[in-house]
Image 1 (cartoon, one colour):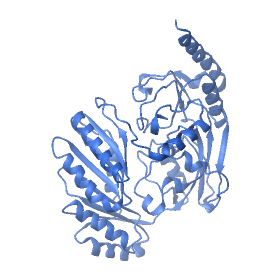
Image 2 (spheres, one colour):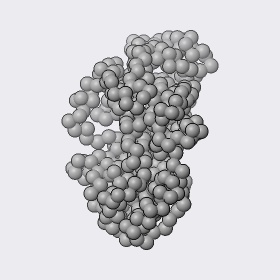
Image 3 (tube, rainbow, N blue to C red):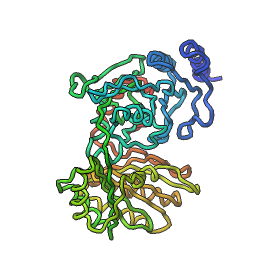
Length: 429
């Protein structure tokens, strides 16, 4: 047997023995095929019961040269590139508490393994919410949502996830537990670790808890949906709404094969306050159908990202472009998919959107490459969230530009041995 292989097996055996002493044998098991990450099979699944246990496990893995894949609810494990290595799945399933909810301060402290649904249910008892419409909230965890920077259409009014998180605790690869931020909204002292870790795909550290700012729950919601003749008309309505004095919470365009482009706008507030808002919006939109608190249209993004029924090859990508270029991009997607591909798009007024392509793998690959080239040429981006099994190798992130050297330097500072999610992030980090 090769010496390096023998050493690796010894390291794994020693790691397993030592980890059992930390979390007890009950919470260490051999990884199953269902635990694979993008086709890469790990050896162990470990479920620590506290931040301290998680940090100790991570330190052991780092010292043994084992690659660690952090996992929450597992809803977005396929996002990013295929891992270069995968030895240990480090699960936050047992770190699932809402630690503290000082409701008078409109903040909440929560462990990383807590689901978004549980968090929202807890703070709703005081008529509050985390103003975030993430995917698969029943299973998605706080740590996973932060690591993937998964926010929805509500960011138009309440800001991005980086605006909502005000503090974190993170376990670094060497076993250090680091804190940044605080429990009050105005705390801005120190290095802004919460914003740095948001969207880093768990490559800098494993989030163990987070503190968020909250907002009041709306008493009433109204959704107005307006079909349009083409993408140009849809973009005009979006820009008109944005340039108005309306206080809408979300605004999107949805379109797909065999349908008309549709503009959806969400209002939240009191019954009296929304009456004038809806009337003004109707004057801008013209012919529209009004749904009283109808949330179905806001599930379009989740439908695009879900596996769906009927099987078949499909891909899902997140893109970003300027709001003034939405119509041009939507028409391009429709033109590229005019053949055998089925497609659907949901794009927010901010220019952030999602596209789903279904059909032959070669056709999907061709469309994605053309879309990425066009978007990057105009300063936008396209990030692949799901790839079909028979698709060619396709870098999930695209061109990182001038930011890549700095990103590599930050990775080297936080995780010099490349223990956390190796190869999964931008530039193969």
